Image (tube, rainbow, N blue to C red; front, side, top):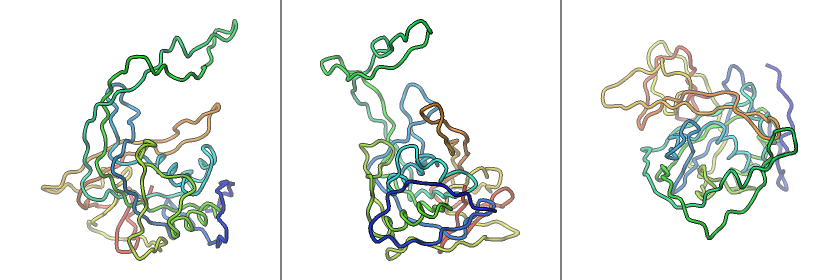
Length: 283
């Protein structure tokens, strides 16, 4: 498959050693970068909930892309093409039990009548940004928060500049913008467990039977072999975004099956891949 050239605008560190990026064929990269992302708290707001601010258990693929762009130093709308489905691959592995707690919080609301202004006779309205009145009454909202969330992220992109910058940042333990576990208040930190090694070769795992997979399984729910005493959860999360009308919009979703333990798969629609001593499924 031909590589798509993109300008990721990643901020290049001094003395950066340019490395060859992976090639990605049928969603499987020839190599990938791997690290652990941890935080004390996390919140990835579900877009299909309107009252209680519930969280996804796994960081959506779009959120992971935003985290990686922050580490590499890419502007808000400068990384969408880097993580397009044809030239990127990401595997997400929850570490330990995924636990949540509901926390009531007080905050200031905004009144639509005070922020929307008529724009002439067109009938359209424009938004006027105003600071909230700090003397106004607070509103109580319930937030569902992740407790001590930790995920192993395996990522590959064909963009040479982005891949080189991200590899350098992970190896040196630096970040251009501080990564967060969803909300900006929940700062996250990065670990590289294998003696500061972040780059791994990958290999497709072929089998005629079942295989134990460490990572979440994207769009492969039918491949999961249910086991006694092993709970399997499924979440539908945003996967791809693009710039649209001065903002951005979601262009694709993915269904992740995941568990606290390894999932047994009988591969039909997904391709298990080894990364070091682990088996994952890329999306």
